[in-house]
Length: 285
Ligand code: AMP
Image 1: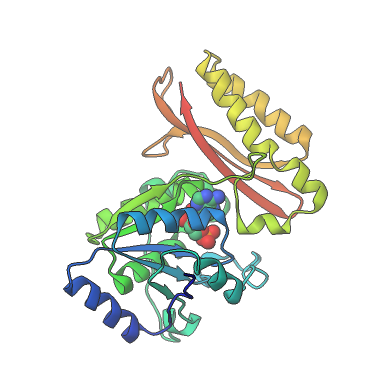
Image 2: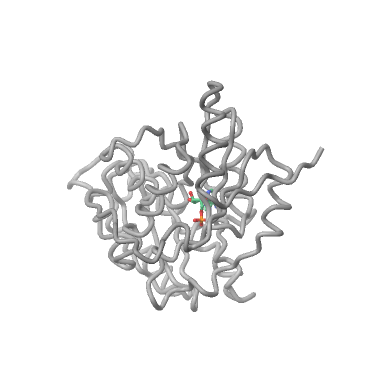
């Protein structure tokens, strides 16, 4: 049977529901999203409902993580269609607060981060992004009081930043990652893929194809910096404007020491026209 999930918008209603579950000894998982739900989000929701007795999905387009010239106002929002998608999943509650509820007019606090948030990857190109993400996620974790929260590997640096923040601030929650869901041609699903023109959409899967090619060549003994250099040229020739393509330590995101061997992470961000794509995969050196 398809059941539309229960939407809650106030702190009081949210706390009352979560308390009743926790008092009954039930485990609670939170999946934070900005809506415009796709199979990537739904995969995390599926994972949450398998791991916990109760699943909360938050839907909040967080103004705190968009820079003034970024796409906050044009970011896709369609609550009706999101709710229809969630009706097929085991979701107990959708928390969809207003901007005023999350940021009252006298709001004056921000979480400031170091460690994986200052790795010169996303943070170099979107300087206020992680402060904004961490501030809202800290609030969501405190409001929803989940035992666990699920984040996508698609945003790999974000996952590490949130995990570090929860540890450092002693927030009693387990931060879990879910794998990246892709289109059949390899393009990682993203709400922002909707901005791609038909021509750009044809080129977009090259980003993942080139990441895979780098991983393959390095696994077969190719020297990392040389392989990365060739890949950067290929991306440029295919029409991408590269922000970064880097092999990094998979836990700290620091640059790899000379002669490093073992498991690392390959991370990239690149523009196609006005759309910024990010992706990452495991790298064995
Ligand atoms: P967003 O709505 O873009 O803020 O994303 C909400 C959550 O979904 C984040 O934890 C993302 O990492 C995750 N996510 C986004 N795209 C994907 C994807 N293609 N596969 C898996 N998780 C994803």
